[in-house]
Image 1 (cartoon, one colour):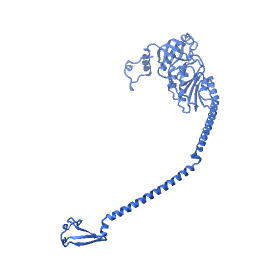
Image 2 (image 1 turned 45 degrees about the vertical axis):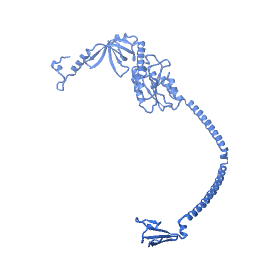
Image 3 (image 1 turned 90 degrees about the horizontal axis):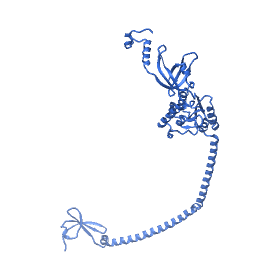
Image 4 (image 1 turned 90 degrees about the vertical axis):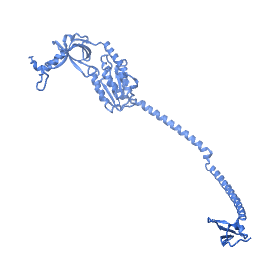
Length: 417
């Protein structure tokens, strides 16, 4: 490439003095090329090594995030890897970041590629298992109970797979009205985890789905690696809908089994556990109805016997008899009360007449009736007072003389001895 004026590239770029594309690309390349080599781990996708070419191409993908980078390496290096690389294989690559000026792309130039062995994969899964367990994602108290009869069932599985057939056939044979919403995804390889996570998010957001089943048939440790992926495990733990894990066969136990709300040993087992058996439930309904009928009949019989006992008691056998007897007693008591009151009144009237006679005999009226009179005068205060002595009044004092049938006035004229 042709050289550039030093003054133009040494000055900051502005709208009046912009840098050419080649200058920006070269500066980026210079900065990237100063980086050292790194060891990178990821999953291999899109391996391309055409016969007769010296350079092979592959894509290295992060299994826990939607991030990938292009890797170039000598074709002989790719052919020397044992076992041969295939899509989905986990590898460790020693490479140097390289920026291609012509296309403006970044890639890794590899000089060593090492396949990750089963032992290393299992060790990493075990380390992740301990991490998730320490965070409480395996705790029994966070697992939710499946609904007795879900309105809708979400199923995430491979297209036209035996796992899909086993779940659908077994569930619908137990409950023919079971409604499924099936989403087919990749269940192994580099695309499995992002597709399953997207399907899980879609079903979790659907209010008609009450339970989600993630199902896959058996396979090797490498085939089941997506179901021990950290991103998938965390997505299942964060889901608001109960999740059932039905991965592989009985011995298989990916990390998804521990995070899910229910672990089923096989897809067939999942089909049997997510819905009740209509025949068993029908028999249980008939049994409960029979028990309810017997209980009701027993209760009615008990109440009838109790009513018979109550009706045989004297108070209910002859309810008016006690009333009549009490009415007669009331009449007797009324008559006795009436006689007692009349006797008391008679005694009191006699006593009152006797007292009146005594009072009359001792009172002033009787004395006046015998010819006596009561003389009164008015004192200085204007009050009438009984004249008891001739010395109490002077001559000419007005007097009031009371006799038996009235009173007359008089004036004092003198004193007689």
